Length: 257
Ligand code: CAA
Image (cartoon, rainbow, N blue to C red; front, side):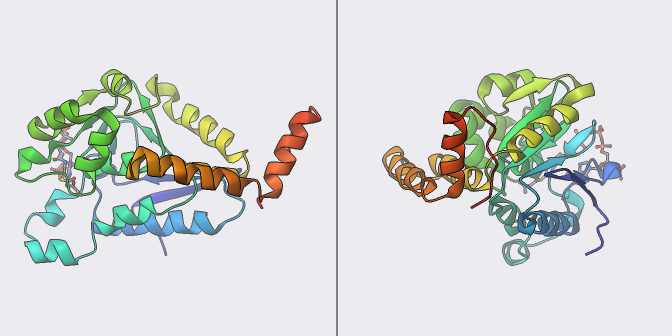
């Protein structure tokens, strides 16, 4: 597929995608989301890639789903068009995804960032679910993922008023893992993605699956799930190599199996 709305890069073991509709603050239209899913799936299939990185530009990660594209759609169009399902497709990616966020990260843009596994924010980042201001509600997982990320009271305030959080507020609420100056937000996220990509692909896949389980079920089922995945890690060569390398005081060489 020739991409019109995203730029795709390969940097060592990191696959990087830049959302690229700057004239529309990277509003996520159907075509852009389709391209993003396709690019991520290709990176998922590439055994040389260990971690994905997603970002926009300094002004906007993404200002939401494309309002102009949705404005005249009816309920059945919206339900059957498989548009929102494109966010679910991103959520099905098994490799870790780091989001580097600067500027506006709103609506479907925040929902996309929350599907990523780690958010690195620039000091200028603004996070919000402003759908209430256009007569709707978050529709790509925001009411669920935001509530789990920041708790009920703050999620309600954001969803019911549309108020945006500053990067520092987002850090305090646990929505992002770190806030860095805008000049270095992308390079910091690249470093983080590179570090993740250097780990065992098997262990990364199991670990992501286990942490996500914490989001999706009860504590007791999550703990049971984690226990099974932890035991499964001991079936991999990477577990043997990792633990032997530690004992032998050397760097491990990952096989990915
Ligand atoms: N959809 C389509 N176009 C958008 C857009 C969006 N979500 N956000 C911005 N744009 C466009 C603007 O229409 C404008 O285009 P034109 O130059 O052709 O008029 C261009 O991007 C620049 O935007 P502004 O002139 O509005 O820039 P600003 O700096 O004055 O304001 C802003 C920035 C506060 C982010 C404002 O653009 C805004 O409020 N955008 C909409 C935010 C929003 O409501 N997002 C939620 C969308 S619904 C959703 O996401 C549903 C879901 O859960 C799946």
